[in-house]
Figure 1: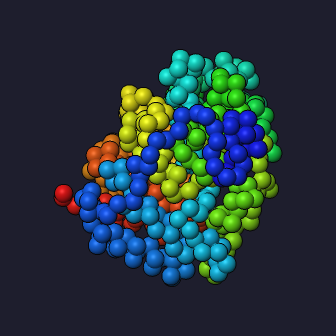
Figure 2: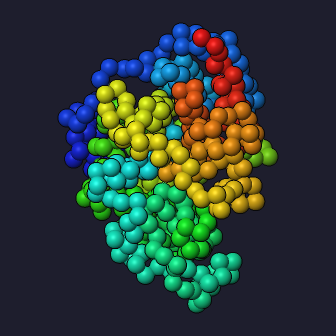
Length: 422
């Protein structure tokens, strides 16, 4: 199991089984079934396996785990290749740095507090993080001259953090790197103050920029809940959903299941050096935008909860109307299209609260339905859900660049083709 060292305060053991008295899943509705019993073709799923296995056999990726839920049933879960090349075979429950797939989980945490009336979408962030009360905006966002700034047109709100419209930059942007904003050695409180000290690259609400916003939102969750962010997630989300392998680091007893990250280079796959504070250490920074580790089965359960309108096996995490808002486009048409790379905008997608949402399926490169939602991570992880077909897909691997070989798109396309008429 993977918990913060402080998670024991929320009723968790650091090894063994979950022992908290909080709401527990009842039964196991995500049991594996013969695909044909829920309208999925086993033969077509074998084509999925053949495609994925070919990428592993050809040395394009070290290993992977892929899973599919349809109608709330597990119809596909396959592991292939290696966690560490030639040393440790991949397992169905292997552990992965999911990077930006952390964002939807952080969004859910904030939305829970909003449902309870403890937090508001229109609340200024400065209400909870006072340093944001004095935030400035670059007069010229291109020049980024700290001597030439102005006051923002309005305050940054909680909704801005959820929507990536706060005017903040990405954690790996040159602006933040050059000013030492992001360090896994800092606490969320320290990082948030560093973020507030760097001018915004635009007025709040005036552009969609893929950013550090969801990590700052984690600090808001801490302040409002009175709990450390990792403790809050463990108690209010991971435990009720039965996510036994999800947390911010991998403790010793689980490290044999950790998949290593590889970079695609001219001489084949090369191990990516570990971070200054490796994923096997409990970091001071509980990074809600990119810091979570999980497994394919755990993330499938999280997606099914959203497909179920906020409930899984008797544990209700969110109300249905809240999930509907989270998975509905929240970005104004005047700000669209947009993308993580502004030069290549996502023509078919908008953004809800912490997830991308398909708004124009006709513009998708692969067959999709309007209303599909999900996101991916910078090490190649991919999670997607389709409310039209009640299908959840997860692909876990650790490769840079994340889009190498367009593996996630191929997986999604072939998996969708496996759904047949009942």
